[in-house]
Length: 90
Image (cartoon, rainbow, N blue to C red; front, side):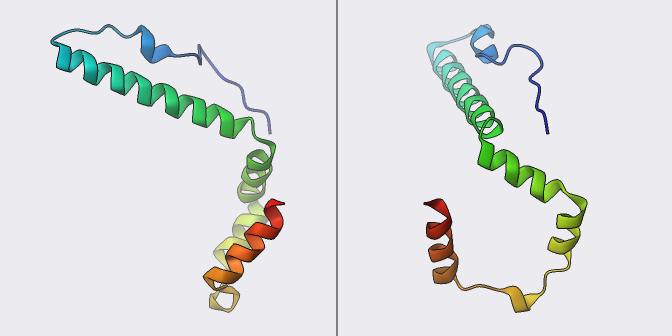
C-alpha cells in the first residue's frame, strides 16, 4: 500500500485569514491549532509501519470476511486482552 499526500500538508490552516474581534481571533487560532494537530496525527499514523500493516490486514477481503463471521465463542475478557496487548507491545 502506498499513500501519497496531495497538496501542501504543512499547516494549510495557518494561511487562513483571521477576521473579527479578539475572541474570534482566539477561536480561529484554536481551530487552526486543532486542525494542524489532527493533520500531524494522521500523517504520523500513515507513516507508522505497524499502523500500515494493520490497515492492510483489515482491508484484505479475506480478513474482512473473517471479521464479519466472528461469533461469541471468540470473546476474550478484558484482563486477557490487556495481557495479550502488553505481550505484543514489547
